[in-house]
Image (cartoon, rainbow, N blue to C red; front, side):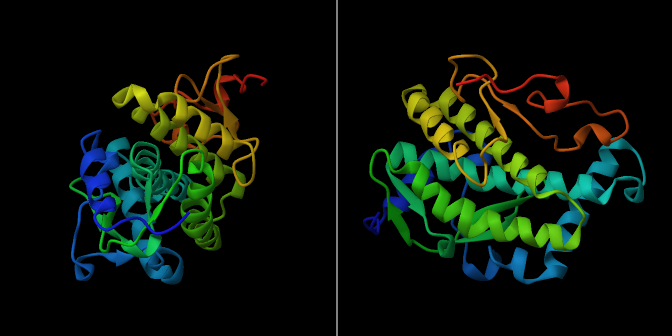
Length: 249
């Protein structure tokens, strides 16, 4: 896995941005974004992001923010951030063989007030066919999501397995959205997702719901994001509380 050629990252991100907003990584000046690492290096910044999620959930549930459990807000914040990172990462790797280096990304606030990535540089890694899972593990799971999960758990009492289950669910969502938009990438997307779920930190946290199916076709997790604990809200489609388990492989 070597450096990508000049312009490769820009071309890849411009293309996959057409899939849906979760795949958008616009170019912005560094002064208009926060470094990715601020989420685990600046507790006040992390607290503010979780509080913003808590406020939005309270508004949707028509309750006071204090009635939204801190761990619910923390879980849904982490799942949302993981989805915004994994979606473009999976697509750029599988459709273009390129992956942004974390140092080329920063945090912006999207039109809905959610945290989302922006591109501030051109540093990227070329990813050979079959190397997607290893690249995603190194540059997304290990370099970004792992310290982010640690920072969240240092501020809010929430289980590590729950947060990594959120990441597994976000990965499945990315795989399924990519497969729907780019059917030619569906098989590789399912295979890459399965490789990531086969080892730590995602091992045992989810898998296809049907025997013989791939992640692009179905997914069920083994933990719960706690969304159902909001008044009037139900369980997510991949929730473990529906009583389903990943099919044996």
